[in-house]
Image (tube, rainbow, N blue to C red; front, side, top):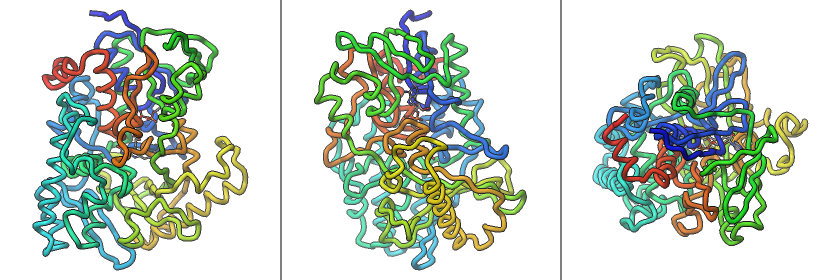
Length: 502
Ligand SMILES: Cc1cc2nc3c(=O)[nH]c(=O)nc-3n(C[C@H](O)[C@H](O)[C@H](O)COP(=O)(O)OP(=O)(O)OC[C@H]3O[C@@H](n4cnc5c(N)ncnc54)[C@H](O)[C@@H]3O)c2cc1C
């Protein structure tokens, strides 16, 4: 039965599309407005020389039978449209340390993960077991992650809200093991003093259980979600960003889009960074303390990314994510940028074109970079940043490839072309303040400061997206559930998904 209420969604990234798909499937009249020429936000793929590159969704998880994303996508009827390749069981993440040349592996499955790490640190076997038990216990507490009704803001065990650094350090005195347990922190913008242990635990377990990647790129998920919206009668507009929001009587009166049209709806959902949202409205019409707090939450760090196209049949396909850091002691210091020594660490992967690739068509290398490294060009726009900026990018590219050469001495001879993106690219492409990889920084020392509710001070405006709750492939769809739950009832929605009622 058609619910007559209308919904306008600002932003066609993963959260906007999940909100759109859920609500249109439930009978709402949905319109999604995306500023970019292509839908998807972090799911968007772009082409260089005919080669497709993912922008913000390389490593995924929980699409396996029984996993959270599998349940949500099955309920939406799109699971069979997705082509997903599990990463290697014996090594889904490989870590190489420059200072002592050691290599460590994260293996799939709880027991294999414990065994593999214990082989590297035999005297730490019991501590590794305790650590693994603890991360799985924390995830059990994160009700929403298990598709149960619950809120992250309610009371939890001391571990849940402790800082990730304190949490990891509480299991071992061994400095190398401490670093190895923290090595994948670029996946969640980890800050040892501020990131809550629950974020580390959710991200770690989701990959231990089910690390995977899209075959042929993440755009397929965006396209499948758009299809759900269109088939349910909704509309998706691209190249038509929201440029102004008119407020009247503590509610949105209408939005104005790039094509100068005004649109009204019963409900509005913003999936963009709160600071970008406030720039669209006259903030004197909303409670000052509210928007000031949201506007001033510190952001997670950004990254410099190199996109490499290989000559055909030259570089092996790697079915895992690789990491490199200069030294164990730098595991939490990756965002401390120094031009001469950049990059302190790298995360690299070869996205699959088919499920049986023997050779890699391309490689993506992500290196943490703070926004301050590009601040002097902050007032420039895409393609008009000047020669000095172009030289800066070229230098970073070469420094990254120099470092990749330490791992793969022949890599230069395999490379056909190189492209790159800086924190400014991320800022301007997603409209994400300071090019923050994962939106606002969650801070266990002051959860209330970084807490953003899906409800806002405007009666008909809800929020969604990575800034609200958790980022990434699982975090943003779960936040979308929270947002939609405000309209549909959370229990109703979870029941439907858990029972796979289509
Ligand atoms: C380089 C990089 C690599 C990453 N790798 C991974 C990974 O491997 N795995 C993982 O799980 N996560 C990864 N992430 C994180 C993940 O991409 C994000 O958490 C996720 O995309 C956030 O989704 P969202 O819907 O909140 O925002 P977005 O995907 O950013 O969507 C917001 C959308 O709003 C649009 N928009 C902005 N302003 C307006 C406006 N005024 N009007 C209309 N539209 C507007 C934007 O164009 C964008 O499409 C990565 C992020 C980055 C940057």
